[in-house]
Length: 410
Image 1 (cartoon, rainbow, N blue to C red):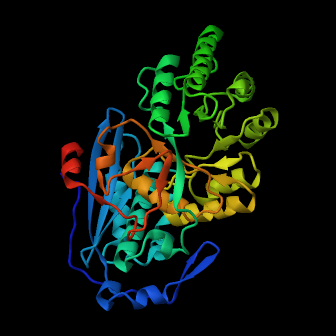
Image 2: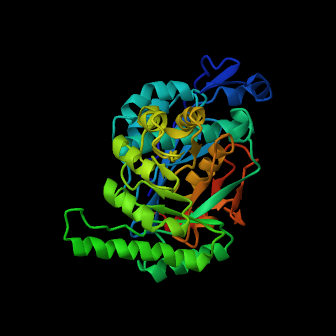
Image 3: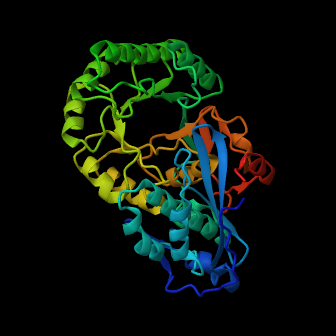
């Protein structure tokens, strides 16, 4: 079923759009784009929303939001959070855009972001999904890709890494090695896994901790042996460790030549993260669950990580992500967006990354659903570890209705 679908024929004049759009530290002229757009299309309003819950696995649903404007253009956003569906939260934020111009994204932010950034990821994901869909409508209505709305792309294609973690149901060194080998065979030049998932509480018996530690370390070396020395391996520790254990395991893994060591402790534990960073050789990454500038500013300004990982599904959407990336650029910190998500979030993340000077690499959820690439049109395509930047209006995608109907929860 469509969990809520409210289409009304309301129209609203665009108020105070003016000739420029302010984005972070960049002012982008829109006069020429708008001059080529019919008055009817400029005077549009948001008239409806549909929410599709797409079942992927026993642990994953993709929450896809589709907004409709009065000119018939639709825009897509994604607010996936595991299996949870934030329907009430989406209703709350949809009320802020219903009957309003899709071009008034800053107005929507002023009305909703303080509430969305209150510390609840369901709220943040709902806010971000609607912001995403507004941008998609903007691009499709103005007949330009997202990157042209904000100054143009820097890259033609982007490197992506295969996150093999959820696809690895056999949680043994050999299980990780098998999937790592398969991802590389498909052309990926970088992979990520979380072989320490399920790590026991640190007050557990030492024998139990040592077994889990050995299993995780063995999995890393099994992956390295499987893929050779030229493939980047990234390890996500999901904040299971303390300072001492983080350092010990990092030293054990030195000869595995990791591309990065992600969140051995929560990056918001600034003193602990600094202590780890000073004692290990690996690059450190983190920040996947942080909200907005207020969440990222402490870890950026204190330089506790080398790479930040904002997720457009709950960091506040594309505009907030650009502001976060701009702050990081000032501190010479790279950006590798967190994206263990569906193809809608991936398309929006590609649009975001295409404009970031300090972009590093984008996450791709590998092997979780064989029909994944067919859910959108044109089909999602990764070749030799790279994904092409879109040149079509908006995010350049639409939903394949047949595939959607086959996998959505009704």
